[in-house]
Amino acid sequence: MPIRCAASTLILAASSLLPATVHASPLSASEILQQFNTVVLGSATSSSHTDGRTYVGGALSGGDYVQHINDTPGSSYAGLTVAGSAANVKVNGLGAVIGGSLSNSTVNSGNSVVYGGVSNSNLNGAAYVEGGSSGNFNGGKLATPSEAMLANVLASTSTDFGSVLGGLSGSLKSLASTGSSVAFDGNLAIFNAVANASGVAVFDLTAIDTVLFSKGEFRFNLNGASSVILNTDVKSANISANFLGGSAQQYGSKLLWNFYNATDITINNQWGGSLLASSAYLTNNQNIEGGVFVNGLNQRGEIHLQSFTGKLAGDAAAGAPAANVPEPGSMALFAAGLGVMGWLARRRRAALAPTLVPAPAPAR
Image (cartoon, rainbow, N blue to C red; front, side, top):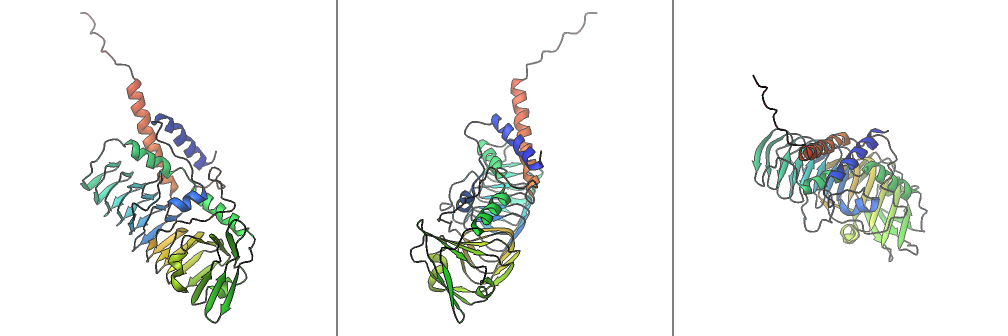
């Protein structure tokens, strides 16, 4: 049995020990795009902030997360989930699940679960820490994780993000153009959307993407389209285009850019729309109005909460991962999940164990 499947089976089996209200189901592609502002399959560094929820499959250094607590869509996931270690991070709300150690960080509200040690950090909500710890536990340090903490932990290993997002990217790239086109006028690229009966406009940019991403200005005419899918097979892109007329903010929730072949992307000006590039390392030097779903991230600009509201043709199934190899860093969280399950099993055995009465001493 594949490693990921074996670990998932153990976690699901142990979940029967939990109260009925604690459960975790794998997320579909559309649920990922709705519930997360940022998903990084590998490691990430940040010197900026993210408005909504973030998942990092490797290690995380820096960043300010869940800036807009009340606007972040509901989820079983914590505000920040990191499979590896995290350092120099600030989580404003909805708590955190950290598979490794946590250092020089602050979690202002929500539950925290840390499976390594905690050093020089402030945890202002309830916290459960398996390793050694130093810092301020203003919300209380629990000897055993609470039900809410267990819900976050079970969620943290429930979805194979790489498989689901890769499946989504593959299904989107197979979509035929709906007749949408791009016209060039000097340094300006004009996007003219043509929607199908469902309100979805599909752009096939494969023949023009090298020229397109060298342009300095983008203008969008959505012509009533409620969802816009833009497919490109470019492998590397350094994009400095200005989105004219405030279109980055205006259309951020409607545009989904599918960089299905990309390995390296740099964004130098304000970007509009969700960016799906599950094999790419992204550097954003300016703000992004939409979600970020990439393999690696160097975040230098803000990532603003504009969940994709459009329709996804061929939404990838979450319950059938295509890969047998775990996502980068996911084994840390598998171990974390198994640690919680072991604690639950021990608690159950203790509750069921008979009371032992010492035998009387033999007569002399």
